[in-house]
Length: 112
Ligand SMILES: [Zn+2]
Image (cartoon, rainbow, N blue to C red; front, side, top):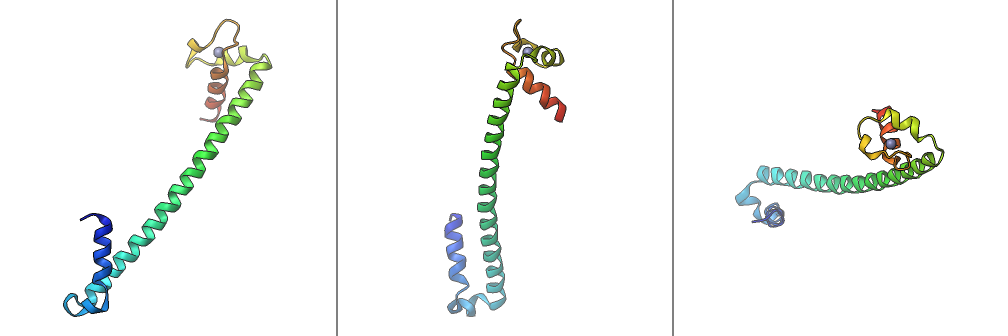
């Protein structure tokens, strides 16, 4: 029995026709569980939608960071930032033209 079948069975059990052999108090208990399950399903759907929105916002922020990094790289201040970047010095080249990641790391460290 999967969860859908179990829910279907429970929805059947709370019908008035079964009150005699199940008992009213048991039907009330089943109804409470069904209501709780319905609330949890709605919250799960809302949470998934919220997470999807957050993922889109993060994606947009990443693009903004990429744009800013590109701009900073072109300002020719990369050398200063690279001197501060010791996490991934292998990314740097001599002309510091390959330092977009250095710039990002430099600013990420500032907000940690
Ligand atoms: Zn660098």
